[in-house]
Amino acid sequence: MTTETHGSLCPVHRAIGILQEKWVLHIIRSLLAADKGFNELSRSVGGCNPATLAQRLDHLERLGLISKTVTSVMPPRSHYALTASGRELQGVIDEIDRWARANLPAEDAADLTHLDPARV
Amino acid sequence: MTTETHGSLCPVHRAIGILQEKWVLHIIRSLLAADKGFNELSRSVGGCNPATLAQRLDHLERLGLISKTVTSVMPPRSHYALTASGRELQGVIDEIDRWARANLPAEDAADLTHLDPARV
DNA sequence: ATATAGCACTTGACTTTGTAAAGCACTATG
DNA sequence: CATAGTGCTTTACAAAGTCAAGTGCTATAT
Image 1 (tube, protein in one colour):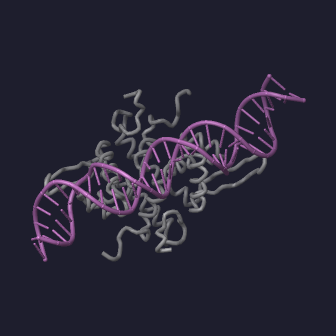
Image 2: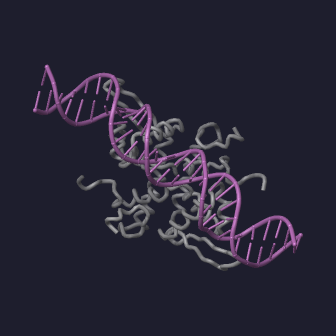
């Protein structure tokens, strides 16, 4: 098999590569709701540490999905927003939302992977 | 700590938690196209090593998204297929596909993160 | 006036996750 | 009877993510 069917030549494959990175979908979802500053976004996303968040934001900016604006350098103030491309991910989030409501109704013992042992 | 707004009580948040695991979307996409055996799936997904794949399949099975059937134990033969829940992710994949075609047209130097050095 | 909290991050040590390579038990094919 | 294929598992290692702390500065509270 010479010509590989799943390489980075396939847009879907590349998209999955982008969206599957940890925290990315959470970040997009949060910014779809409203633009935010770094710490505000961090709180909204919940659980992502600043190092990872910074890295992810940088990556997403380089991909053209979000835009960063520095409003003030010394009382530091940044502003993160989705670009047009980023905003188009609304459809993806909506579909995940739809699927989730239809298939993950209650917070049962469905997923056992990251449950707090104290609750099991 | 009061009532957290983004915990596992939110279905979307949980869904993202599931789908963002490395290789999961690739696996789903591959199985949406057709049921497969372990190695065939491995090849189709492309790049996921057996240890991770096995772990992911186990997890997805436990979540009720895929079903595993062992056809023969000793000339080993397994069969992986999506469940009804899993198949409903078609919509999510379709949306990613739509987004990708509209926003990641050519395979430019847009994403530099995981490019095969040999191709750059 | 001074202490405290907040912003946007960075740094370094550590843990978790993922990967590569090899191997196992076995069959079917050349 | 050697080779390739099935479905994995094991071990050792690399990469990714996390925790805790810190930096430099301001704005508000005390």
